[in-house]
Length: 95
Image (cartoon, rainbow, N blue to C red):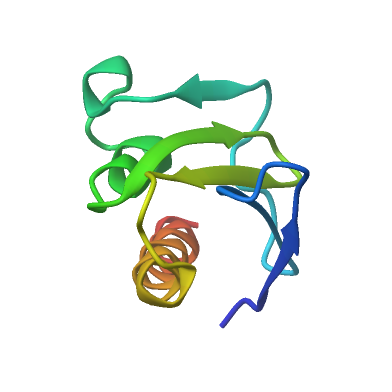
């Protein structure tokens, strides 16, 4: 099971997440603020489907998520980590 590390950013509503589990995406960059902006089967869509997540920025080595005002990281992070854990598990199953 991959481990996830979070880092604060200059924006108190955003967190940077890294992992020892591999790449978040194969290449490039994905930036989205709505599930309508990305295909349904993507990690970005799954993260944006979490109530309280305002936008995501995914790169191969890390991702940044932003919360909506008033949401607590203590409430959001277990949901985010569940999505990320499932994402990496699905990739292992497909390999």
